[in-house]
Length: 246
Ligand SMILES: O=P(O)(O)OC[C@H]1O[C@](O)(CO)[C@@H](O)[C@@H]1O
Image (cartoon, rainbow, N blue to C red):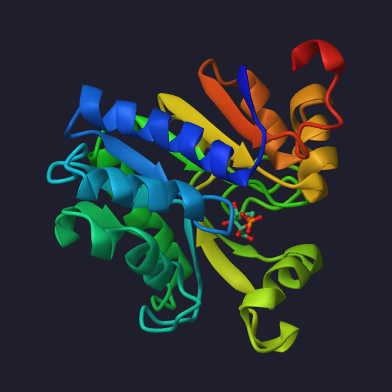
């Protein structure tokens, strides 16, 4: 695993954006696995800036997102569909038909999970998967569990995730209780993984995920088994890892 230490959120975002843009330049028709949450917003802003300067072309890029809340529509400003359009898709020249997210309005979980898993497989390997990390170690919406969930599945969100995400909703009651997410195996099939973290609040989970035991109780710890992972984090998020690794 490579670790890039950035001094702050802005530098983290620029460095991570550099890795994503290198992927697009090296392989213009690459498949990007994308993430939502507050962490990658600065990265998306930087990509938009480089696109506007004429340095990036998204016309052949294809994307698959990690997850989507179940039961909220695309028009809902808390849906990940809405987030991706607001923060990236509407500002670059990516064709709409090249972007994919789970359909949160499909009530039949088995049907939607099967469809999305098949879709990802049909695109070949994800060339670069972007990840944020939850305070409990979740990646995508793979919550701490007794086993690593493999493929796209429907999850019941944990209380800790509902608490963490209530800041985006009118109240905790409004946070959806379920989500569709890529599974751990779906994520691990990606050729390269880029995980980002910032802020002191992520320091414990970064230490536990990358320097603790590999366990489904800390879903991100499985990334220790992937052979091409890059962690880009700010100093605060790296403040608890063993000194020799920084
Ligand atoms: O980037 P944030 O807002 O800290 O969120 C961390 C993780 O939590 C989620 O927002 C889901 O709760 C993920 O999409 C994200 O990777």
